[in-house]
Length: 382
Image 1: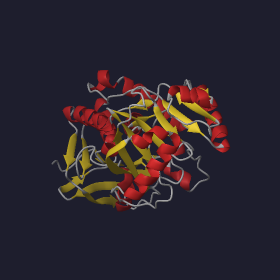
Image 2: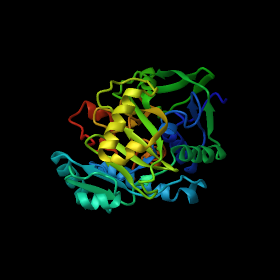
Image 3: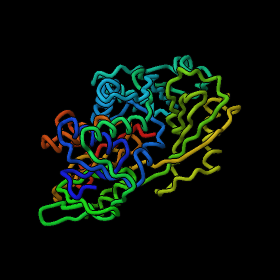
Image 4: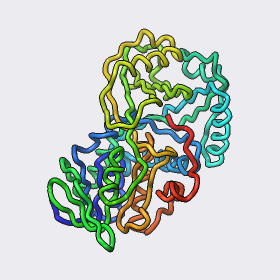
């Protein structure tokens, strides 16, 4: 490995790879990505791969709009297939407060140019016929939402970054970040020391630990999310959208001959636990069968767990850290890291090369929001 670099990116998931790629295409290739395991080996490779533009804040909507455009151009620009399928996202809404909030969200989304439909319960059922809609108040649907393959997107970005001269240092853990009077000076890894004036913390669920090495406290915490793959689900068409039962947070989407099923256990405390457990699976199946009774006949094939990097307002921490020159955050995406990674890479490259992000106003994502007023919480978190 080299002993110095202009930029060191900590984290070899899709966010770190996207940043490396976007720096490289702008001509900044003296970059090292440090990943303690392997590319896409953390949260990226364990993601459900959802790509949606239906958010409750303007900044997140704009992040999604830009990311969706970039995923559509991915084969031509990156030379890699992201396996992006625009089958749509269908949100099922059974609580009055959620239905009212989503109607307000649709007003915002339409103002930003997004084509989103407000649906009656029966119109929602017409899209996915096995779904029970008796308790629904309404639904929203955006046909340009969908899902892609997080691992392929990460590998595509990393491959192109490497070909332009970026070094990806896999199997090396960051053990310390040296800070002097003028700011960041070096990153210490268990494979050696890298002198650098600029560190990007893209370590996802481990971002707070990395930031702490530089003397930065950031409210990002890891939370387990479990996914299961089920088969014998011929009642759900292959063209089905991603379906989200928002009240329970249960969701499903087609994957090969089966379905991916997931849900959030809102009572689970923060941890780095990535084991699956039978108690959660029973709760997930109960909620899935309540919404789609035919799923009672589905066969669970396998399950896995990953980690969300969650902030108090469910928005990322994106940008420089005031008072510490040369340290930049790109983490805390609260489950939206993959879907926003294309935009994140472009915006961080703008920050580093141009001095600020200019494609999108990312000031709502500044770390300063936690100490200078009430941040605007993202409401559509699954």
